[in-house]
Image (cartoon, rainbow, N blue to C red; front, side, top):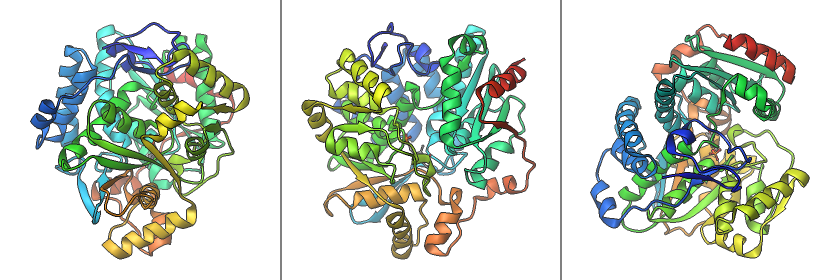
Length: 458
Ligand SMILES: *Cc1c(COP(=O)(O)O)cnc(C)c1O
């Protein structure tokens, strides 16, 4: 399998290269050159198999034999360390409504599913090449923690995580800053998440600096992260085998819901995909009017979705335009120039055939956390609540699986405000509440960050 850029102006590359790359050199995103298929016989063979088996089967469709074997070995190892024997358990919430719990990994959010798998694979690839890389990540909370947990202590990788100072939850910060391994550095940027993200983008855009410091990305622009996430959609479809399944996906950067789309394209019985957003609703506007237009970012109680530019939407634009890379490049160039792009009627119709999009405001999010607690006794986190509220747009008798993207204990204030009950951090993480934190503080300034990194990699 080779990977091609959505903008068509980069040479196709192999799995090992896509594993180690962020955006393609032409500014596009890598996608598989064709969608691999699961036959119904293969799917029957996977029914009832352990989660790591399903991961291995998905990765075998995307990686050459050596890497597929490595991925299978890593999958059996890392998912065995999750807190739940089912890894991604499916629980019934109401008749025809299910929660897919994706928070049983080391840092209590779904980001662990991909990062736990790809970190050891990246390390293996670097060892083979005798290379060292500096992974640079900006985080609104969950990606940073998952990256720290996955990359801490790995040889040949240094990790620097930028978080917006005093704008993430205490639990999120402590998950990153209490790490002891010396290959990880945390930086509190005096600014917003957008400022931190802009700093990272500026450093990657400085080609000479990026090359000299061997910068590498692990955000969801990396295709292998998406590939890893296809597995929980597949495992869920295999469990609910009576009819095609609709998924409601709390969405920010469009990576997770694009993994659901990939599962459908591979032949899994996915019915519809609901893009559930908070008031940062660029995707809801795009999917209802065809106009994808950047707006101001509003801070909400579901901060991992406080995003106005959903990077992975480019992958869907490419698909909905029948993989016309030229048309995709033109649309994204228009967006870069003016902050707006307009989908043609046929592309919008193609998207609407699979996707719904629903915006959920803060009041409805709180009310949903409260209602689910009252009706089921469960505490759900604000991101999950957005997914639950959005699922109400589907008919009562349609099976809808809502992705529970984070554990309630990561966002105790919002959950306590809604229910009066404060969710407790699992015992194995209690120590972070009192451990010594280690992080540096930097101004929102590109030169200051560059000077800092020169120190960090020497
Ligand atoms: C990252 C994240 C999301 C959004 O996922 P995308 O792939 O960016 O759309 C939703 N919920 C939580 C808890 C997250 O950490």
